[in-house]
Image (cartoon, rainbow, N blue to C red):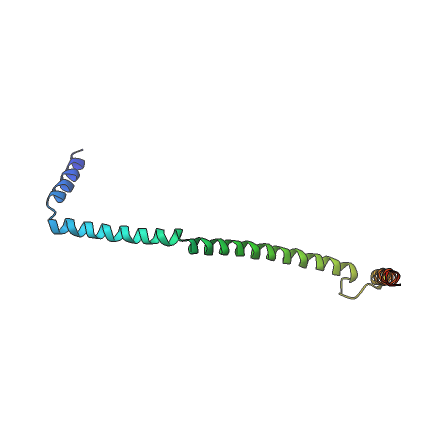
Length: 119
């Protein structure tokens, strides 16, 4: 306890021993720090800054979602490719031919519907 009292007494003596110049310097330093803090706050809440931050957040979100979509699409393409190629990467004719025939049939159907509408 004796040590605590001495520390308290020493700090009180130091405060009493401060000169007017030291006190004024402390006040000036505190004013400068306060002015810097206020400037920083003004920049943070300025509409341009808020809009820029919102844009950056939105762009980051879009880029993240686009990245996820790209990965998902890439996986889907790889799965589709695996359906039409064997382990060595060669085309599987037994799967390609039926799909190609269906595609040609759909094209012919669309062409005939258009021809009927025109004529």
